[in-house]
Amino acid sequence: MVTHPELAKGLMKTPNAKTVSTNLWKRVTSQLNAAGLPMRDMVGWKKFWADYKLHLKAKLRRNKTNISGTDGGPSTYTQLTQLEQQVSEWLSMEQSVSGVTGAREFGIAQTVTEIPIECHVESIGDANDSIESNLHENEEVICNNVVHTPRKKRSLLEKQVENQITYQKKLHQYFR
Image (tube, rainbow, N blue to C red):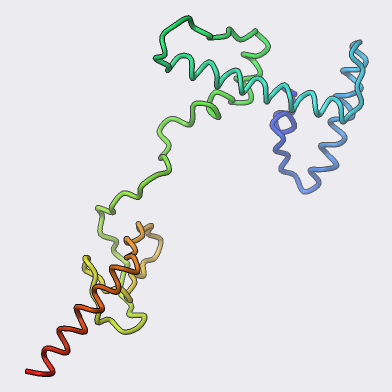
């Protein structure tokens, strides 16, 4: 597994990944069975490896929760064996449990503070109803290679209220 980390992680990225993976698992199976008991077929060793990684990741997650917990009481931190530490390191399991440092998190979109250079506004219909921004509801900003946060969508009730206000203003102007 150390010599073939892509097999260990289950991330074969070759054109014939399935064939390469099967051949490597056959080799691993014969080496493990030659070492002695337990004897398993290729499917059995694949399941064993998947279960081992699953249980190790769960152990890392429990340890992380225990370290950051404030429940009081005795610690339930479980020391990793030397093999578990090695497997965790070369499979980067700590990152999958704790996350990648410096990475952006999913959540509420932040407002864009930079003004993109290559942008223009395109009308995609009647632009009479304005919303609480510089753009009209049926206009969109077209930018090349710039990521934008989506505008807040109005609820149906808000749209109906705005339409009623617009209607009343026009009716008032008509009967003046």
